[in-house]
Length: 123
Image (cartoon, rainbow, N blue to C red):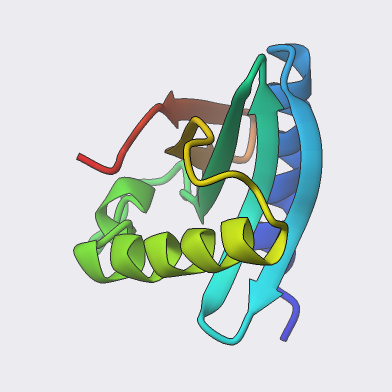
C-alpha cells in the first residue's frame, strides 16, 4: 500500500542528502527481511538511511501522535541491520566496507517542514 506522506518525506530526505553532497545509490530497496528507504554514499562510506515522517496539525492536539524518533525502535533497528547485512552480501561488497545507519526525521506542518538528520544511530 502506497503511503503518500512517507513517499513525500523520503523525497524531501533525498533532496536534503543531495544538497549535502551525498550520492544516492538506491531508494526503497526491499527484501523479504525488510526495506531500506535510502542507500547513499558520502565519500567512501556507504550510508543506509531510515526516514520517518509525521504530519503535525498546527492546532493544539489533545492526543499528539508519536514523534518520528519514537517510532525508530530497537525492533526496527534489528530488522534494518538484518536487511543491511543481506544487501551487502547480495551486492558483493567487501566485508570491511565502511558503512553506517542514519535516521532522518521529518516534521511536516501546514506552512513548513523540519528535517533532522541523526548520523550513526546503531549505538
